[in-house]
Image 1 (cartoon, one colour):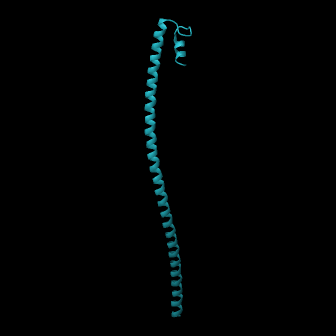
Image 2: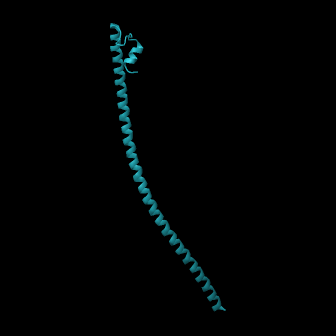
Length: 117
């Protein structure tokens, strides 16, 4: 009987050992899969970080270009306004001396026509 008990107990221990070994093997495979996934995610993260940094630099360049263009537009608008005022002043002076080439006195409508509006 003792030998049957020992044999039975040994069988149970062997079964537990096999189950633990199978669980260990499964955990090892899962660990390998997760390591591969982590490696892949690190590579993807590196690529995304590089792309983000590239886009940040591009955004900064575009913002600088926009600021330059806004400055140019403002300067152009000031120059246009100054030229308009000079034209109006010259046309008004000409109007004081007489009529315009088209026979109209140089009122606001004639000034606007002369400026191409």
